Image 1 (cartoon, rainbow, N blue to C red):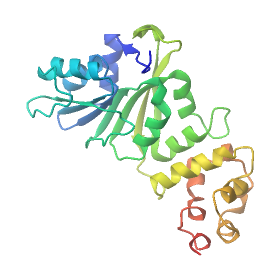
Image 2 (image 1 turned 45 degrees about the vertical axis):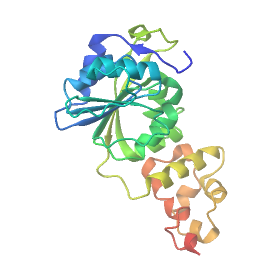
Image 3 (image 1 turned 180 degrees about the vertical axis):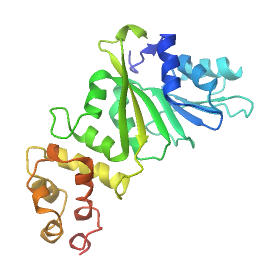
Length: 262
């Protein structure tokens, strides 16, 4: 499928996804890639508002017809309708205000959309990914799968892999199984600009074979800035750092440290 469309058809899985999100009428839910609307319907039955962002124009029109009786509109903003369909690219569109995110994400945008969503405030996210992507997201520091994705996600959120979903639950059937992940924003997250941390993690793992001090130097950290950091951390490699240890390096590259403010 050119847009990576694999539609979730298993009703029991759909109900469990909606249940994991603990939705109430006070919730405004963002759904990216609603497809035919099976999950959308379960969300609308529980939440006060669902923003369904669909890039495919034909699918968006079908969703409008199904939920608000308007097959021709690309965007529906009827206050009497629980579902607002937004025909747009979720990577580029200005996203509406929401409290929770619940989505069976298109496989081909899993990585970039995850970073975009992590950098924005939300109360809870329940997301479907390819199984291997979910395992990398939840990987522990020092493990084989630990990388930029796990470091970044772990900085922002507590991560739970709720269950594995068989590829047979989708049509057309993909090549791999999927997994449902629940992300809860950390209340004890160390301070740091979200965008700056994402850039830091990317820069460190672009130099993952080097020690942290060399990775930071490649990001523009000068000697004075490096001198203010924990010397022991600088001698490690990026995959050995916890998200919070990585956050302690931000002053060297984000203009918060004395050496970086020269």
